[in-house]
Length: 162
Image (tube, rainbow, N blue to C red):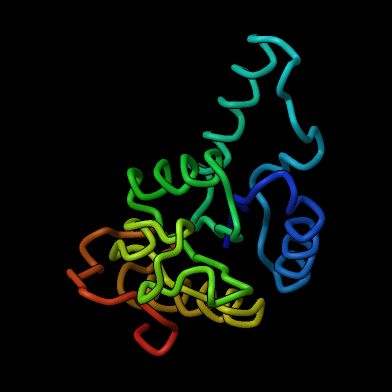
């Protein structure tokens, strides 16, 4: 399964670790933004080119893995994926970050979108990717994501919901 990793620049090292682990399990990264790092202050043309490459990486992916915490870019990338009806695996190493019962500025309404699955460790990320692949192959004969598979929900989707 092809994937894109969205996270903050401060998490670049952890993003590389996640990408390496998923690649070792047979998945493919569509675009490695960590290779160029921050492009702030490098001019409009560079920013425009990177924005296009990152958006294309999301569109080329079967799934977006959002490693929290993330910033504006991470949430923009989540929005691109959801707008394209692509599933998002919200990788949350610290569950306190998304405790909806607390007044935490890090919780976002889109974390509860029907296409979002929460994973609290790397094994859960891989399991979600494997389950999506199997589910789509059995229903459609391919890995293509189909938005009609996702019903309305009132709670976050966890692995046991798949």
